[in-house]
Image (cartoon, rainbow, N blue to C red; front, side, top):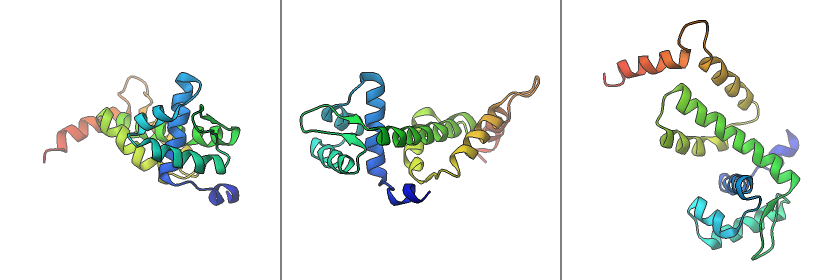
Length: 152
């Protein structure tokens, strides 16, 4: 926990790492312009973030070159992506929130979810969405309940 808290990144830098990770999963490398487009920011903002991430040894970056994650960067990015996926699944599959809204909420919430909470939330989502015998899972029961009370 000591090293992790010392190297805590801002939410913005975490977003850049997540974007690089996601781009590199489909393209094997990320480019500045792709990151800017994905995050809806300027190329100058991307350059500043890449310099900061490079200084912290999370990315391999040279101006006008491809951007790749270091081993350290990939490990952190995987944790960020996992938190995002767990939150997205919680909002969409458990609470029944519309997909785009669930994604946006997960983007905002993922930065404050600590390593102590992530595995518990993952286990909760798995538990709550599991079918038991012939019954609907608890998440489906909740969604029906929500539909009956939301307009009260």
